[in-house]
Image 1 (cartoon, helix red, strand yellow):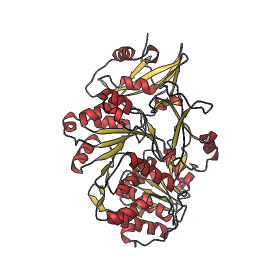
Image 2 (cartoon, one colour; image 1 turned 90 degrees about the vertical axis):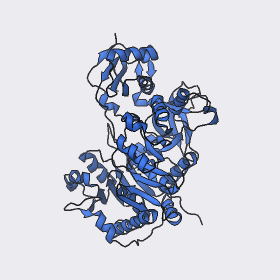
Image 3 (cartoon, helix red, strand yellow; image 1 turned 120 degrees about the vertical axis):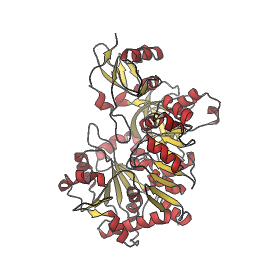
Image 4 (tube, one colour; image 1 turned 90 degrees about the horizontal axis):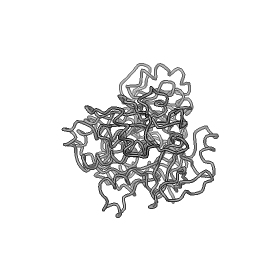
Length: 523
């Protein structure tokens, strides 16, 4: 008899095969798979007693804790839908997402109880407010509910096309959209990931990536599928990461490129002692080859880039290593590793197309849009048919990413289409310019955006964060740019700033940089 494809099977198997194995580490809390599964069952039973049924939504606002991880199993195994929300958003965002999703229960970490209390009277759909940690008047206490509940709950039949989660995209110029991910989507993403990045029960995974972000890139389930250990990290801090890598024998983590930069630039003395051999998956934005080179050469970690979007569960491509790469020099290999790569087996079919949906030539120069269809592509946007139809125009999901395909078939993103700079009729990739500037020894981080120019229409502007203790003038950076890239691509202005605006997942918010203060102008 056929069974539905669902990541819930991963915990069922882990409890059966790895029951005594350590499943979760969260500061002083250590849980085996048997204990973790029992807690999930108790919360499932509690939710049903609170009136949560199949198809109902349960929202969360929490950092990476064991209570948060439990939601990814306890909620869907009763047929309900998890709505993990970005805890760095505003009160207005929370009101919108909770009410738009129609969440019946809202589970909140202690750090955000006061924030939610200020607006809870506007969340009419919520019937129960639950404090995941700590206690507060007017809130149900998660710890006591789990401890006092029996583990028996009414099991429901899960179809693989059922909704598993609604993940809200980061809204910048419009309301965030609710991405509908099915049980099948998540199962396929996890399995495809493990085909390319094999994991074993010896895996010890550090949660540097927020669990709310595309369900932690589905590692909320993938680590469990391997029978590995989830090591929770509540706040990204380089020193804490170094310590946990050593103490908890970390073997793997995921991180956006900006997080990699912070890890690669921690205190030199501590960095020199960091555990070697950690495997890293990076995504969220194209990493600079210079960052990859530093991580692999100085830390002894192995960096692999994956690519996708929340709408694709999220992975649809991986920069897969092949034998031909072995003989390349460190810098050449880093340049290839900075590409998005090739399709994941079983995940989705990926193309780069022009406006007429024709495939672009594999010349590494002709830009087109990445489109995809297949097992990991979302069901659609929740209660937003217009946006869904637009995203799936022509029967393919349109990513909005501008990319080229190299002769070896590897895809490389050159920009978001909205971030491509058109200067004097020439298309300029902000990512390409950033990659060059990141090789300057004084540059820690950089973001390049197009801004109005009286002659060229618009021109690149570079916003630069210098390394601690490093010095570089805007004139020096401009000279470096002109010496290392085509003149028309070099930024016409440089802005030295203390930090770049970022989302909770480390993505640089370029829209905030446009229209910022002027820097030094090119002559």
